[in-house]
Every structure is written in C-alpha cells, then in structure tokens.
Length: 264
Image 1: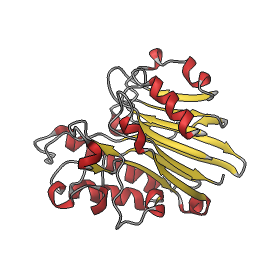
Image 2: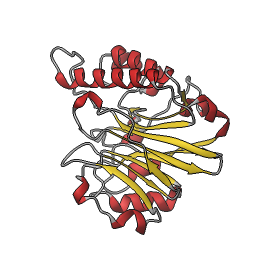
Image 3: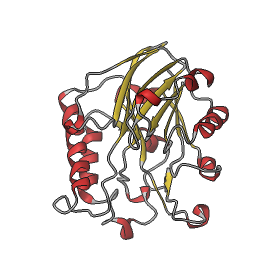
C-alpha cells in the first residue's frame, strides 16, 4: 500500500497537479493539507474521477483544511479533540480496512507559527507550541497502535532536516522549543518512518521556499512534512519516495509529495 502526504496549498487551484501526482505515483491513499476549501465547496466529483471512491475532508474558507482520499475502504475516526478549541480544521483521521487488519491514519497540518520565535510577542508561535503540546499529551494519554501519522507538521527537527542548522536555529520551524515538543510527541508512540530509510546524517527536505528563484541550485530546503508509524508497523515499511519533480511543475506547491510504501 502506498500512502502519499502532500501540502497542496489550495486543492481547487491545483486539481490538475493532483491528477498528475496520481498518474506519476499511483497512491492507494492520499492525505492532503492546506486544502483551503470549505466543506460545502469541496470538489465532490474529483476524488471519484481520480479513482478514489472514499474521501473525508475538513475545510474552511481561505486557509488550513485537510482531506483523505482513498481507494481502500475506510471509516471516519472522530475520537481526537478539537485542538486548542479553535476548530481550525488542522486534523482528520480515518481507519483504513487493510488485508492485515484496521490501521488508523492521522492527517495533520500543524500551525506554521509566524516569523517571531517568541510566544509572548507572537500569538501564532504561541498557538503552534500549544498545539504540539496538546497533540503530544493526547497520544501520551491514548497510546496508538497500528497507526500512521502524516502531514505538514511545520517543524524540521534534526540538524540535517534544514539546509543550515547554524543559520536556522532561531528561525521558526527549527527552534529548540518546537523541536523539544515534536520530539516528545514523536516519542509518545511513534517512529520516524522517513528516517527509517534515510539516516539522520543525510540531508532530507520536502519544502523549498517560493523565494528561491532556482530552488535546485540553492537547495535551501527543510523537512516540514513527516510520516510516523507505530512500532508495530515498522516491519511493514517497504519504501520512501520524495517526489521532488513536483516542485518544478507549473504553479507548484512549495511542498512536494512524500510517498511511503507499507506491506499492509
């Protein structure tokens, strides 16, 4: 089974790119973030036309929004809380019916956090820290099993998850308070599936800023998109693919699709 996670940065704007991604990667399940479409305006016919008869979505006008599209039968899981009591459509979960048994899939879009790494001066950064704290606490209190967590978590935790650890250590997405919280969240029941395939000493990016005119030449990337699995699914991991080609598509997202393959 192949699962793709992708911050598409507007579903309706990039529907043709979604179709291209499906053609090139042929995922069984697609987890999208930053869909930027309220539920009543979601393009209902699109998933089925692309070969995904099952889909769930949680969206809002203008920003945020998550969706899961699946070829695999699934049911909605609504046991998680309203994170930070904001109802800002940053998480959706489903239970996939796989040949080896049910698997819970979480799709997250963590707040970006603004530009100032000071929670007293920047409410967006304070919200981000509170969100990650709450997520870590939730999974500590509700230990996951046979679960996969994917999404744009907006934190690059390791030294080689960013193009320059030294220059970015005080830049939001790579600050110590964020890293400490993400490390605690990951430790509450998950394994970093991407680093299962790519050693921590190797560079690994999924996002390149629109500000870089030649993103390949500068390669100033960050790993903001993640795939975590519970330890009982580690033996099922089969492969990882970062679809960097998507960053060169016409009108691209600044994130690229990440595909994980599992024997489920």
